Length: 290
Image 1: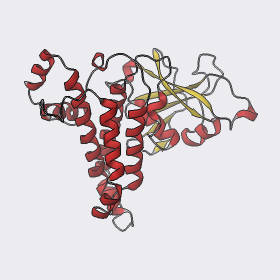
Image 2: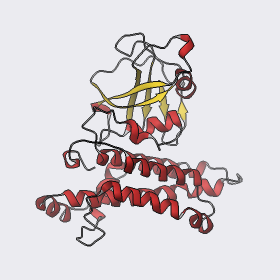
Image 3: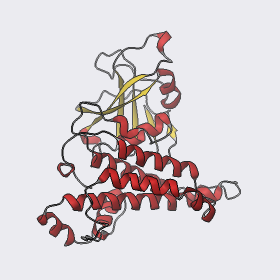
Image 4: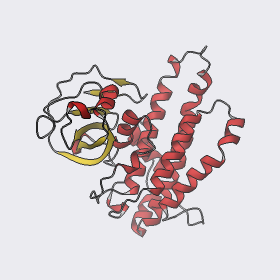
């Protein structure tokens, strides 16, 4: 068992004898070799997969536990061969939005969230771009919260101290832009009754955490009928965000030299991947909007 913390550190010293979980659903997949998974997540756990032999991993993420199972048993000479690993999770161990473990799993295994939108299985018709968008939104919030919480632990003499110090603000900007896009899309698809309820919703009792942040952000959203609101084209809005990030990269670095360019580029790539993912599925409004 491995634990992926919100600050992206991975603890592979956790109890390796996690009991098999029940009620797992398949959320998607990733590709990797056995050797790479061992390097990233530590020793595998035998006995978790249905055949009791195939290697498997349990990755505890801030969004719930992700189980990685291979479809075939690897022999010794195939440990460096990349193959598909199913990503499964227990439905009672997930944040609202279901797909929240996917960006964390990709970040832990591949070091980037950019490819996580490709994780939907071809036959997993319940997957929606809206659901994937909220999975990435949740990821950004938890990353921002973790980076904010560790500022007092930063080495002020380190050359990259300004970048680490500013990172929470940088993530917050990404977070707010994505939330606005999702709200535009949700408003466009809402019924008159839903719009009336949204416009009249009360401010949530002040609290902490992801649920409160999403409720407060939804309360702050200014429903409108202008040209920049009520946009049903979610891929187009995500692609526009990615284009803006690309076009403003150099100027942002000039204005704010402590910008984390690796984070900036990863965010642009993730937005573009979300916009381009060929998800066919049910209407987004059949899923919770956070």
